[in-house]
Length: 316
Image 1 (cartoon, rainbow, N blue to C red):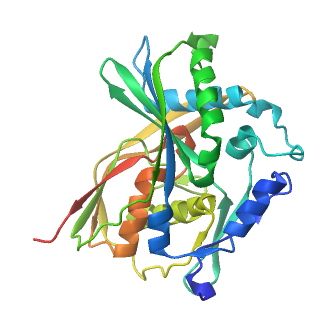
Image 2 (cartoon, rainbow, N blue to C red; image 1 turned 120 degrees about the vertical axis):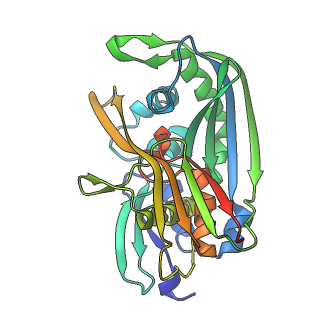
């Protein structure tokens, strides 16, 4: 396929585990078309039913859950040096930076560079008198599902670090692992596509946060293309020339604060939450939005941000 159809190229970091770096490097040179992406999209879900003595808000609880998950995996022992010899650990797969992704315009010229995203997302939903916590692992990250599930058990037992050095203890009622392969493509024309953001969308341009419709589409493309690397391939797709028109409804700014005990600092975050309605989306844009419902889009996705549901309106 011509270079102008390539969305991304991968450049591993020196500190990445050599076996993971080689696997991702091969993925960066293995082209895949849209049908292949839909057929091969793999999600391993670790689902936990939990009980909390106090209400949980996703953007307050998930960053702390992610931190406890990393502690349980031993992420704090990774350091900044070279990876250890032998097979990569789950901590190295989930928490070590692996490399950089170079994005291209349709004419083949570079347009952006970013870190390879982590191959997992958390989500949190009320269920009965408790909550359903889901940890979704993408592509070959699912090979570490057993280690991730055990770490999640330990993380819940450790509790969440709250303000004032308090611990919030969570009770684990049930835990399951399921695997799914393939994401069905939508068939038929679509007049409107509505993205209902369940958690804030965080997009940045320099120091400014924004949520322009074209930037949301771009975020879905980049996220889906980057996550395809964890499935062993890189998409070769012709980008639509124009983004659909869109308008936000009931949009509101949302902020949150998370912390890093390992780095000893507090990290504020923010984004926009509401409904984004897109008119006459192109089929390829629609596919990227479908992938985005599984991966979340934007920044802070592994902390729960950028989660949305996609509602489609046919013509008529």
